Image (cartoon, rainbow, N blue to C red; front, side):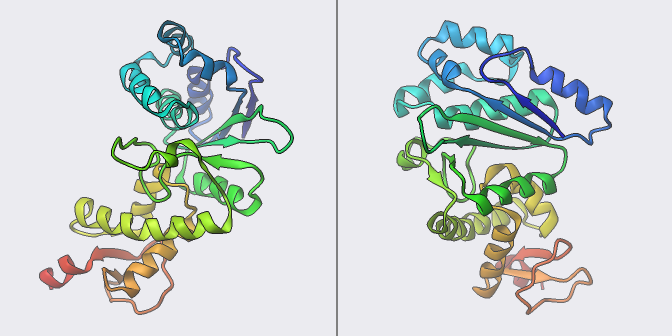
Length: 258
């Protein structure tokens, strides 16, 4: 595991991370800290921001027009850094999983951005679990269910401006949002069913939930009979215990096929 504490802008680019990741057979994790005030300031000037993006070798991964349009509407930068700059950094690094969070100190306003890059979904969920367990000033900006990387102009702007802490209330609201969002994803994107593991990998980067929260939401969907949970052997399960190898399917699709 590599800890890269930037303390502002420095020379560690995602290409450097990509090289380490490749040479270590895709087994390394990276935690990158940014004092992001300097980066946020560049969002007010398209030419400066373009230069920063070029210095980071991110030009091909960043949609500058989209970012400036969202910035004009939100008048803030934390969501943009997490979702748009973070996803670009992940793509350029070559690592498949990442969790972007904003760390807000209790004694001052000079927070920093924490980016965790991981080769497997399990590591990403583990990092998210640490945020939930400690609730130590970490904040995230965006929806509470799925969709944290995509901005919806017709959505609730407070989700992208005020942020949410990793507390009991947010955990409850996140689980409720996941129940709704997962039902839609299963119906629309996994019409033939999928395993819990495949679904968790699919949703991993797009939620602040850890794996226990995701499985709890699936258990709620099963209890409501919105989905059917099958064991690895193909038998319908009545237990609330959700395993990685279980197969899940939209209840309507399951009954029609039956």
